[in-house]
Amino acid sequence: MLNLITDPWIFARRTDGSKTTIRPDQIADPSIAELDWPRPDLTLACYELLIGLVYLACPPQNARASSARPDQAALQQALLPLGPAFNLLGRGSLFLQDQQAFNDVPDPPDMLFIDSAGRSTAKKNADLMVKRDRYTTLSLPLAAMALFTLQAFAPSGGAGNRTSMRGGGPMVTLVLPEGGLWDMIWANVPYGSPLADLTRLPWMRPTEVSDKKQIKVPPGDGTGPPDPEVFFGQPRRLRLVGDARGVTGVIQKPWGTNYVGWVHPLSPYYMLTGQKLPRHPKPGPFGYRNWGGVTFQTTGAEVARNLYQYNGAHQGEDYRLLVAGWAMSNMSPLDFLWSEQPVFPLDIAAVDKAAALVEAAEKTALVLASTVAQGSGEVEIGTGAGEQARQSFFAETQGSFEVRLASMKSGIPDDLAKGWLADMAKVAVKLFRDAVLDGLADMTPQRQHEAAKAWRRLNSALSGGKAGKDIWKALGLEMPLVKKNKEVA
Image 1 (cartoon, rainbow, N blue to C red):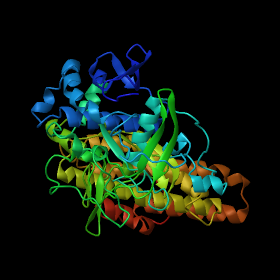
Image 2: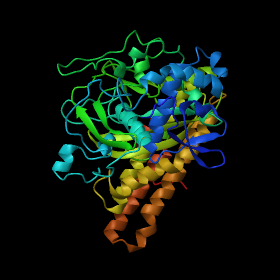
Image 3: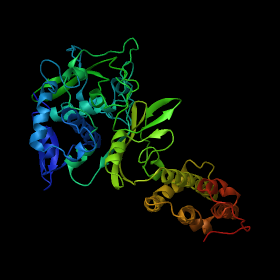
């Protein structure tokens, strides 16, 4: 009936491109190249699951131990004691499910997917952006992975249906070192000790319900190894209905565990009114303007623990970071983020400078959006041509920003601020020309007049005029004396 430790169930691809199904220990087989789930949220969650399993079975104790990871045989032996806690169906305690055998009428199994319509949404015929009735039966591997994904990323789901311990759709950041799947999984496992007591997993004991506003806080002071439950939270009270042929339904009861104050080692956090809160993706592309507190530490924000740990063990190394997760609006999924970003080893002074460059870019993008909107005859700068120019500005300065950050690895160059200003000005002028000036001949005289005024304002800002005061202040540059109507070429 599928045991997630001893049976092959994880969809994967070999280095030769062929598809296969593997056990968790087989991630250490060099011929296994990558996971092969049909949805990116399942792939992301499976990374977390595998990192969590290794953390339970044989985590490195410290940075020195992290350089000597186990081979497949050792990993298999270390995972075997976990087997009794990882049955999907049958009798006894079942993986991520309530110990009670509910007898209610089950919902279709597609309720396990975040982008599926809930019972109330379907009843109201309001499932425009979410879907219903896609899956009448799930294979056991898909059901297992969907179950873990929901418990790990659960959004609000109606009265009493709790969110995950990171809220709905948390941001996940995973170190991507050189190498294959096993290199990546091992690089993200927190330091700790093997799990000795299976009852520390929430489905191996009665559910800690929250029907009377009970909360569950993490044990300890947060300075030691993460509690095993951090990887296997159980906010939803669920029971799968099915047999060896597949899962045909899911029964859900309200008032699962209400997690408060837990810090997940694979997510970045920020401080708000004295509380440490998990970051969540926003719709749209993820670029350098989002890096603060995600790829490098900033005031009032913390990078994920796995990133901090990896930086400490691999000082001075460049690598890439996977940033992923659902962008949510309460119960509704808006977008799914999957982005690889570079990470540069920077000292505190360089991080402060990087933050200043981002602030200057934000100010420049705002001026660009405003002038493009004015030149295009639009009232709002948050939509239309102005917003499109702003988004294009960040995309087209991404490469330049990465070059500037790389230049700070061995010290802050003297021309950093002026060089970044020149990079931004070149892109801003190009985008204004594309959005406004190229259509000048087709405008009415009044519109041509407004376009010319917008063009002069943009050039004034980029040259150090009054409109660019905030840009120059962010860069720490002294405002120059600018001749009237002077333009940036």
